[in-house]
Image (tube, rainbow, N blue to C red; front, side):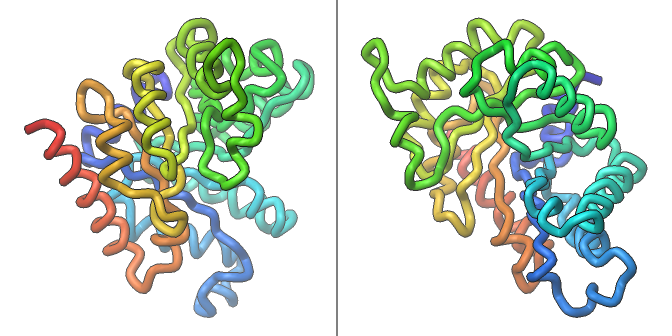
Length: 270
């Protein structure tokens, strides 16, 4: 199954647009996992078992696993292998923000798609299409292109005007009109700027949009759903990490966030 179709099927099956940011940090693991042979993997298993009924996707940020050295990368591999065996319909995203010259991108694509086995990867458009071609040519996988991000300094370059419109809008149009030939592209739009998210939805049509920045980063769920849902009331992957991972009850935190998102979706369908 192609990756974006896999995402849509999972989202429909579990009635959820919630993406779990599995940004597990070795320094924040609860003490009960520290004696395990692979503490990060054990923590990930626990969190996933608590939240699977509420999520359409999982998005580990590879930086936190790299920071833990070889043990962290083993835990990432074990996590994705375990999901392939137990939850094969769950959409998996490697948050790596790759983008480099062709031969380097080809190596990154092999590592993320073929070795680790992810369905999708986040990518930087800064070097242009040719740098991302090793990813874009994989019509079985999904390419999630950074467009307008949620960090405070995002506007320093992303909002610069070029040809009468901000740079990030050129990215959105390029992805939809030229880069998405294989229907395997998505965009990243930050939750903290819902007005721009709404503009991106108009530019992107029904292309799925990954939206980080709710939960601990303060993005407003109602504004995100109103601005970002597609013509079918879906097309979003609303990402939350710390607000679920380190909640007293991660399963309940995920269920509540899923239900909050769905309530806003229902308002839009009335």
